Image (cartoon, rainbow, N blue to C red; front, side):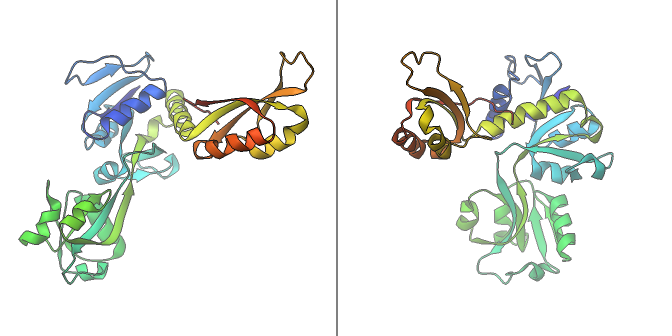
Length: 296
């Protein structure tokens, strides 16, 4: 099985980090190498431009692809399940939780376009013509779409277009260019995509499970401690954990103090307060560790 991943840009490093954390270590490759093996002999990596990855998957050059939803939507149909899929659709298997951005419709702040309906008969410039046309069809507005390959935000100021559809993460570029957001066209993040014919392949399911385990571990910590058995209910109230904490007898409790070992997964943001609460109910030897993967 082959996974297509971004060969450069802002998505490259976090994607390789995800593969590493999921247990799919990518073997060392020379610069500009297109393919790489992983520690799994059944899984290899294809490096490609983020915008080209959807087409590689559709054409069968790769079985899975990791790229932005915006790129996949621009290249063709994207569905969330095989029951909805046509032969040339991509199935959106998993939101990988990074590369978040939004495609927005924007127009000059001092112009006369304040609502989507004001676009009728106007021109919209974008690097995403297919997404833009689909959006205009959805909102039932007839406007011309002009495809550009860069500096989209400048087009309204040089009389190339009346409005734009462009990617924004923070909105800073739009503000600098005196553009106001009129509407959200598409919320995007990096996803794991597959062709409909490979979704049920056991190896694909294994990859999805591996990625899910990494995502589930993010923002969580593993707590281990000793606690008086007599106060166990109070400890459980502090850290319910995933389905309740794990409680074990302490073999080294030679003095018969009635101590138990308690293990639990907690949200990272709660660790600071949780430790204080645990100490207050008699917990000791509290250990906090990171979680690499968590299969729920």
